[in-house]
Image 1 (cartoon, each protein chain N blue to C red):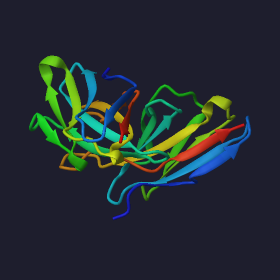
Image 2: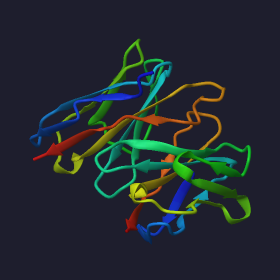
Image 3: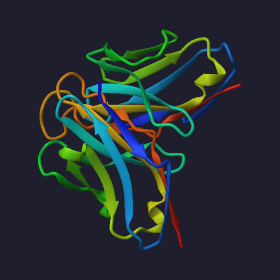
Length: 117
Length: 114
């Protein structure tokens, strides 16, 4: 049973560039959330996707956008990169609805380390 | 809105000693509470969760946490620390309904001395 997988694992971008990060959810999960974790901080919620739509969004600017595909995988796009966007970006998946493994538990991937120079 | 406060950014213990990592939450409705562990250069792994069943929750690798509503706390404990327990620990809270978006604390770094 594959867990949450993310790619790439590491990348370096220049200020002003754009980046796309990818995520495949845990098998059977239909909801994907993205988090930003700056060095020494806890994860900060960016947004959540369900049924290919953004269901909820955290306090992040419009430069951060996403997409969910019919197979539930997801992308995070960040435009006009700033030095402050350097962080570990975590994807998490969950299952909507009720049940033992339902939405009250999210499972994280290993993350994508983004460095902006 | 819900929130968590983790007391102490760093906790240092000797191998074999008791581990106590503190977490206090704030929520206007009954919460779900979680502890996650993050080893260096890795993602977050779920240690244990409270979902309104038993107030004492046992997790992986010998950790447990007790939900105390009167104290709004969910402290993480382990009777005997092992070197392999050295990691960053995050407490998180979410609430019923909606999309269960958890809010994380700032984390506590557990240091284990030989």
